[in-house]
Structure formats: structure tokens, C-alpha cells
Length: 213
Image: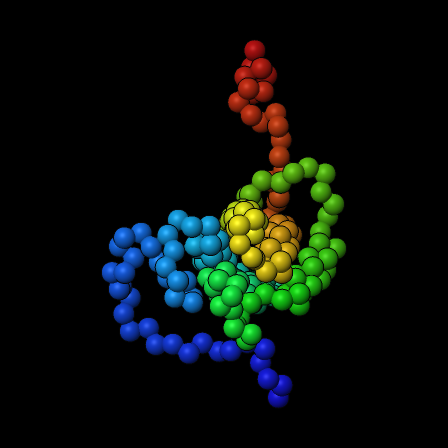
């Protein structure tokens, strides 16, 4: 068997609270103390937030798989993405000069797999002639939530990259992942037989008021 590219975690979490963050600072993976509102903390904190939403979407897919076997595929993908997001968090939580050669991270392989999945699943979808709104089914909405949080994580990483070194693969991955969440939201609606909610500008209150005049 070939050697795994990353080291497996070696830790024992014995205490949940340490009181060391009460003054508004926290420790990076290398032990450096930084303000809790720094861009690096904001970056991997937002990736952590995205991971939680991806977990919720994964659970929904698993619960739907009994009546819709296609959802098993979605659940497997989302579970893999959760592990990949944790790998991004690992590298973002570490100053570049303290990164270990075998520390978990995102590579070009993860980016390419996302692109392959996007192309394959998008090929089965009807052509879009309008923007879509989150809706139609819970799985669709949860994946749209993931998409928007992923975009925010990407924006924060781009901002961080102006000040400190950020692996370019991490930014590319988040960019492709947000596109993937969009395609996946449409894909689950298609597989579940849920109607897509199309954007209708004239459903706004101003347009409806004119119709009533």
C-alpha cells in the first residue's frame, strides 16, 4: 500500500476550555498568538462554518437516500468535501513558515475532481434561462447556503492573500467548490423532482403594486 500523503492527527483533547482566549487572542497551529478578529482567523473560521453547513446538507442527503438512491452519491461527495475543508482549515491555521511538509492541505487533485464532478452533473441538467432562487426543497436550500458561505470564505482568503501567503490551491478550491454547490443544488432538485424557483423581477412589491392600479 502506498504511503498516505498527509500525516494523521496525533492529539488528545482533554480540556475544552483553557481561559487563554479571554483577552481576545488565540493560538495558531504553530503556537503564535494572534487577535481573534485577524483575517487568518476569520478565514479558517469561515471555512469551519461552511463545514458545519456542509454537514447539515450531507445529513439531509443521507436521510433522503432511502427513497431516492441518487442522494447516496450526493452524501458521499459532501462527506469528502467536509474532510477537504478541514484540510484547508489546517493550512490556513498555520503561518507559512511553520507548515510541515506532510501537513494536511488542498492540492490540485481536489480542484480537478471538483471540476470533473461539476461537468458531469451539470451535463444532466436543463439549460438555465433565468437566475434561480434557493427553494423547491430543503436539500436545494441547504446547498445554496453552503454556496454563499463558500463565496464568503473565498473572499476572506483573497483578502488574506494580500497581506500574507495563502496557498493558491486553497483559493482555487473554494472558487470551484462554490460553483459545485450551485450545480449540486440544481442536481438534487432534479433528482428529487422538485421545481426550481426562477427569479421573476416583477414579483417584487413595486411591480405588483403597479398591476393593482
